[in-house]
Length: 555
Image (cartoon, rainbow, N blue to C red; front, side, top):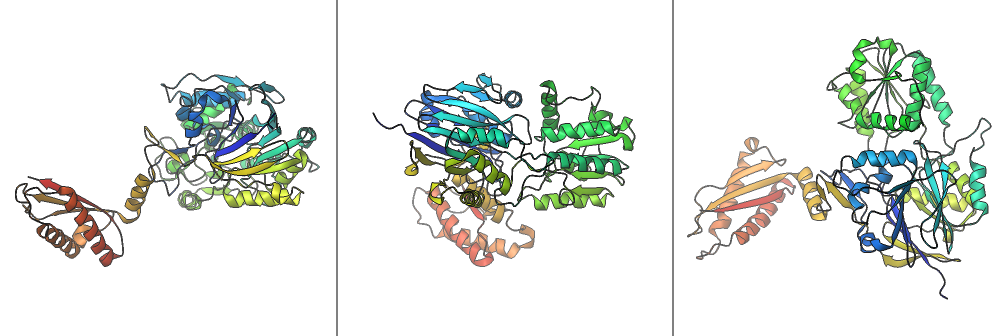
């Protein structure tokens, strides 16, 4: 009898932050873990989202037994509406709060199939196929009921630890260490674990410390308090509402996603507070400043989020003023430093006070740093380790964490999206097989129709601009009927560069006049000549390469 083999394939999350998706496969089953989206970057202009490439899964959808969702953040659930129909609408296994967030988002996609979601809890198991069983366990994160999963397979136990941090008691001991150790004592073949903060020293800041510091700040604030944080930090939001009640302030929530998440958590009983503790933002004007606490999105300086609208005077109900205290209860995501600085400057110019997590511990990341990583590995005691979720340097840092606690260097598999690892009872190796895992971009109603060529054109337009040459020709003679029209967008201002524009006109005219005079004009040949020769001329004159768009009109 052949030795059982289990394939492990990451489709996203191993070369970026977000787009988390992976699957395991044997002869008759595929189990997917997470189906997240990635937010656009500078290199993807005009794109709404980036989602995993499920082409391989689509070709084997009859083998898909389950989609396990570890928690309700968009980088783990966001691609669901775009791919479920392609995958045969497999059963989703997830927690109650993630279920409600997924279903709430489905309201924006009315033509999608009705999802079949099985709600799971800590300690529960689910038989996914004849030889794969999933067991779920609680992890501490910024959203309730974040779940790790033990896949019991013919090759051994495969454990996936998604986004997590460790919580520590007053004596500095991790509160859930024994529960994780029990999983490790049963034997772990391969541990697959996130790496987002693996290079950062130390251990997680306790959420209790954050809550205490927030309460102290709130007590010292005389005017309005405006807290900016992520809409997905449901646990933090609940604590803020509790503090507001203690200090006799009413809470107003600005931001649709934040309001929706709070309502879901309250309906499910994760958060409990008085009925009038959170009031409609429209009623803000009815209360004195010292009785107001506003929670809103936009601590990353996003242009369309609530905080930036307040800072720029575009918010319908809130205008920043002297005496306001703006508390940014989140860390700055790499790449957002400039936007956050603009936000802070704008608020400060209006006389407001700005406090951020670099001043005092008012934010605890949901991603555990180095010591959290090591303690989790020590509890699980895996034979093999695959670091996931993060850029290569983050995952490389997690490899070093693994080596530090005694996992052999050769037993750490450094994979990229699309790579295939084969696991047997006694081995784990990366094969030469490759699965398509290039980015699939969502742009408006289009999914996957924006490829590398379109992106390259958008980048050229954003960096160098464009120049259009409109050439009107006599269809019979091929001669110019008038001077070429020149249009520039994002390249030069025509009125200030008349000499260059006239040179371009003369060169376009010369190109047309030197073309062979035949009975049938070839517009495509004319466009090609104009594109090549004018492009070379403009680079010689300006050292810039705008997109050249020739338009040939035959009359």
